[in-house]
Length: 383
Image (tube, rainbow, N blue to C red; front, side, top):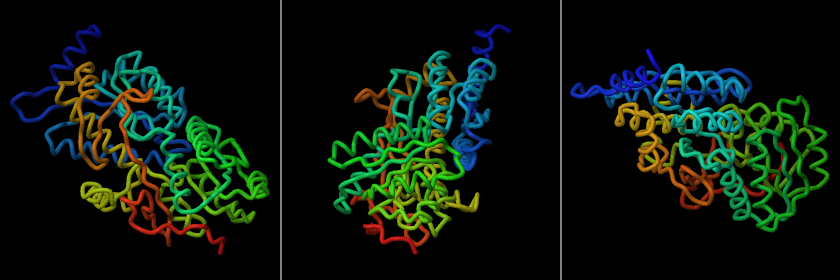
């Protein structure tokens, strides 16, 4: 069977008029194994819940999962298979910035709609790719929300940056440095590190010597926990620790109560943001025995949007692409609307709230209209 004939047969099989249901095949690339697997698990859970909910709506999703192990080359091979072998209608994922950015190039090349659920690197939706869509907010919004919050709570004058030297870390920290300077903050340290290092105490001691008012960290979960443990060991005590999402907004980090308490983080989503969000969080906790992170919520929302859109358009890739570009959806993330603005293409606008861990629980403290609790500022020191 030729490729064109195979795709035509697949398209006819996708829509089942008169039966009240539709069959769609969707690819999902994620870090199922590898160093980012603890966060990847949240995305998998969110996607699985979406597939269950789509079925209740009459959309039967054949989900083709691919494990990128957190490596761009593996992610690209996965995309090749999904685009040309499995003939999926669209792809959700991958998780990390490096893998999502690598796959975006192939989505554009093979003309496969790709919806990125939770990768922050600015460039992903700044390359003019009209087959690539991003549901989550990009890197500069992480930095702006955290710095705006700190400037609202106190009067910091200086800031230090420590971040992993990956696409995600460099992108968020870069945006943070630009915004800090714009706001008149003096940058007293700029430290990139290789992720997974066993010891950051020398770097943290170097930062301590600069006596920064704010310490801005960008890490995935293992490094986020280690950085805070070793900050306590060296006695680093700024007015505030600012965690740039990712590893700082996870159940694992929240569970480390002795080092996570009073740390600020920025997030894409909170369970308290709407009734639909709360209901999702309750169902997630009942199913998986733990609270959902924003990664789970973003992945759930992305799969719901893709599943509904693919079903309505009979699995036709171009029709799906056009529908994503021109449609809007309302769900647990609020309104999803992929727009072209300020150099971004197909970028959903999303306000990122700031949370603070207080007594072992994440509390929304910024912006004012979303705040559930008053922020504790400045950081009182280690116990």
